[in-house]
Amino acid sequence: MLSFQSLVLLIALASAAMFAWNNWRAREHAERLARETCKRMGLQFLDDSVGLKTWRIVRDADPRTGLRKWAIRRVFQFEFSRQGSDRWPAELILLSGRLLGVEFNLVSDNPAITPPVVPRQAAPQDTPASRPHDENKVIPFKKPPQP
Image (cartoon, rainbow, N blue to C red; front, side, top):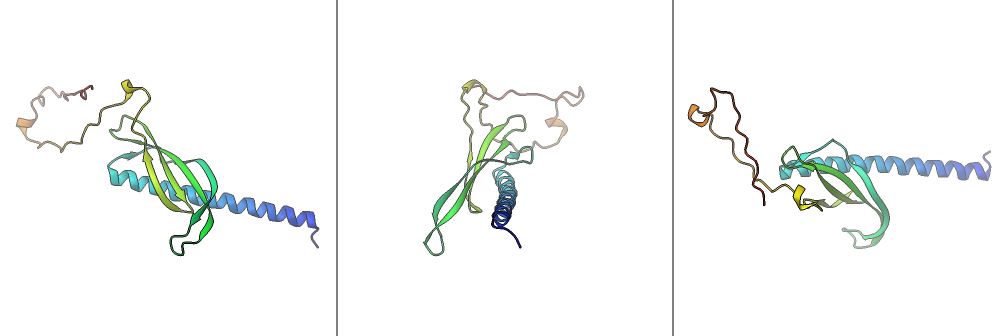
């Protein structure tokens, strides 16, 4: 028969394992949501990883019944790119597995390193007239306009 101390230890270990497994599932869900959000907005999801920034226990109203219940609010961090050469932070907020929002930080503390928003352009028609530098094999490079 188990002693009281062994039983408490067993319950504590089982609770810790269940909490770790729940966090692992929440991180996978957040990564899937971040990837889908970036794809829908035309952004590049970087590094295929999402990291837990903060978590806390909060009271939340159940959307079906309106009753208040305890829930875990998790904030995950990830990074995205707009043009392929830049890197921007973003946060994804989950409340008991429900997506509350995604915050894209497109403002830098240093305005000199904030790249301008350049809209995506349609690919030009591939005709000899549209390739003036074809014989020299030169690819023209245009710098984005500086503010």
